[in-house]
Image 1: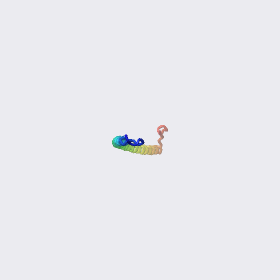
Image 2: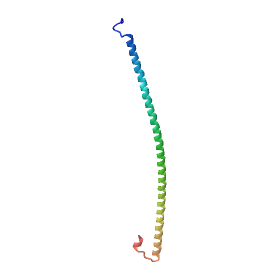
Image 3: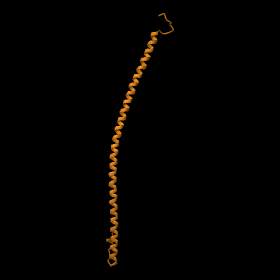
Image 4: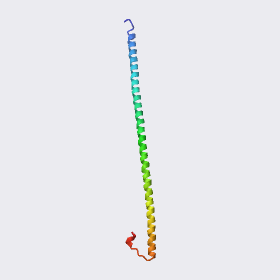
Length: 115
């Protein structure tokens, strides 16, 4: 070893460089695997979200159909009640007219029959 004792031999510098290069390459490979794993996980997540949205769309459609059926039944019930109220009003007017006609000819209508 006839080199300068204050400097490292060439093979030590080459070994240190080789060790550094191996470490850097290994880091790139490991991060590539990590990135690939994250990318695959993101793709799986997006596929699951798409499937979830599709099922939500189906549920939303079913809810809208149920809502429109309910709305139709409520509208029908409202119309039937309105007709029943109109009929009851016409019957009350007819009863009042008949009672008035009976009173005009002298008939006495007992109070309990007025209810």
